[in-house]
Image 1: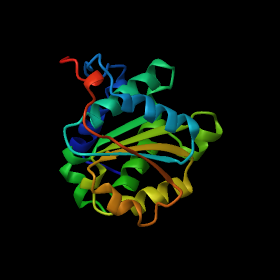
Image 2: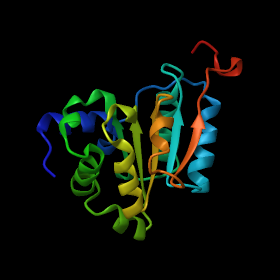
Image 3: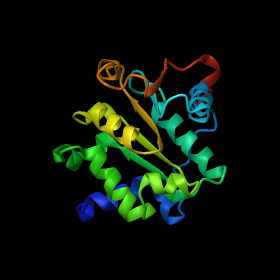
Image 4: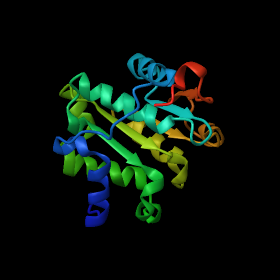
Length: 188
């Protein structure tokens, strides 16, 4: 799949670890959510972990903490794709944007299909932040996890629950992210 140069530049900016660059500096205090996400990913109870909740409560930062932890544990940088869905207006015009981005990722970044990578012991992690900003995201994720061995973490608003019931049964495990707890709010 051919993407515009601007979109490729944006995707590379969202995934600086592909080029050996660090993530943005993250707060030292971690949401309890980070541990919950790790437990769900590790259990492989479902191929999609959904973190939903109101805006501005730390879902994106928790996602970045999980991503950094994967890198720190030795997951190869090219095995992690992160897409900030609400910052890429160009993909809204795509038919099936998630599937098109994954096609590009397979070709341009990992150089093989997700399934081939998994068979070689190199399973990929896909992070889609604010996924509800994409049209028909749920059927695309269903298609993706039904045909590929991959772990997916999606975050978004509480309205995600409306889409979850439409075809993603048995494919998701959901974490409801509430407001910050007192032990999570240290003023970093």
